[in-house]
Length: 374
Ligand code: UD1
Image 1 (tube, rainbow, N blue to C red):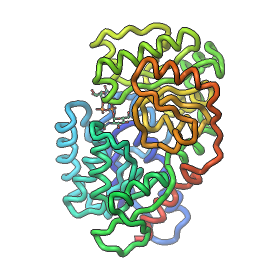
Image 2: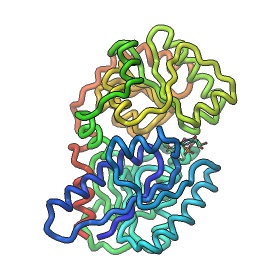
Image 3: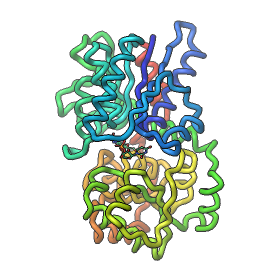
């Protein structure tokens, strides 16, 4: 079997590393014909600290194709990706195209494949924020609709898809119009379990943690278009973090999108420790050592939970609603007062890993087994 995997943005490198390893393990343990995986990197994230560092740390196989398509407007970026991906898929003729999450690279990979009648497998299917202003929500809904395998990370994701008319089934042989919908667990949980034992901080992050003190700082990230592209929202978030950082240091690895907009809008940064984007290992070390997390990232909300840290989400809604219901995540939006109030309540948020929301840490192996059954 030949699988073409399409990645492009930072979180996809983490997710794909898990499945690539599971493919290697499958190949070394199975007597049948091996699975061949060809990695295609769209280049959506191109700075080395947003891309190359992940390939190095996680020993992700070198991409077979690197398209170098980063930046630009949503439509232009997605369109250029589809064009190049279509040509590659025509040459490669894969049996399956594997896509992850909700980025423009996800949608481009799925669209290019489905038009060539190549089955699409979507890892992280079924997530919904119910906010159609987010490019990610559009990407997810469309990708799910045209995928043949829907690998859901949570029970909530399965319920979302059932509400949209999908039927639970993990059996093959359903025919093209009836996708397989399976609760598989979260590959990011697999990644956290696997890499936390080998993660070491870079000298910069290590000295920062020592200087500020373990459990004496918060970790924050801000990059969602809905926050960065709204000057009031961005202003409020940074005003709140400035206030919080007066008492408790805040480390914020700064996404290039946010950096540009902070400069453009001349947003005042006081007290916050801004650093360049960090690799996955540094992120693990920051998570291990922080007091709690402020973020508008989807992935970091879960990682906070994996590392038993309370999380304040800088959005009005989340795809990981089980964490809010469980009391370990507060939705504060991008409002100054709400963020400040949420921080006051952080001390009382007891994060216990008492429910298997995200599977058993073997989601990657299950995905490979399902695909190999074809
Ligand atoms: C994208 C995804 C989002 C995901 C996030 C992870 C979409 C619509 N959004 O958002 O779902 O959570 O990745 O980080 O696909 N840029 C650089 N250097 C880079 C990468 C980007 O300077 O290495 C610049 C781009 O030129 C652009 C901006 O940052 O101006 C935003 O990048 P983009 O890829 O559009 O989206 P993200 O905000 O990273």
